[in-house]
Image (tube, rainbow, N blue to C red; front, top):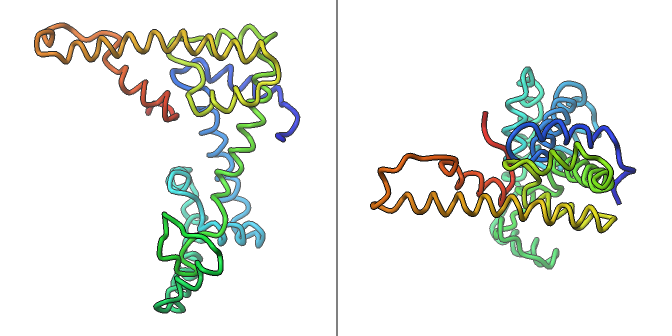
Length: 238
């Protein structure tokens, strides 16, 4: 169960509603940047932190590249990944034909991502940034759904035509909603926005017909991109 709802999280979401796209995706991106900056600036030499990063092979694909964009952290990233290179090199030196079969037989599982299962070449733990953000987002979604019935600014923000929660965050918010009014608001406001987006995509598809290609593009021009962002999550690049 997430921690007690934090009002400041609701305020962060309300502020993020001023920009297009899912406000929680936008806020989560900032939270992730702060988390990784804290590690790279302050904790990179901490034995416990280094141990966690050793088990997770640093960060996942998305968070590794986000961390690389955090200003002034080249030394921290270099320390982490230099250690990982030595760790992986040692595992490679110890690998032998047939070891992968006995390893996975002991575990009683097969990994689709790493079918060989050579010991030491796959992370044992998930990305620490992913774990942190999952906890933060669930806490924020509980706070958000609890605040919805009585917070008009939040309701207005989430009702913006090009805003509202993306599908991944909506799915989690509906599952975490502790009152029917919040559930109903998210359900109906999302359906209203979807109706507009569906109409714009119909218009986009129509104008791709050779008979109508001379017509000028309108709001529907980027509807396909907004549809992808809504279904998959994420924010538009600035």
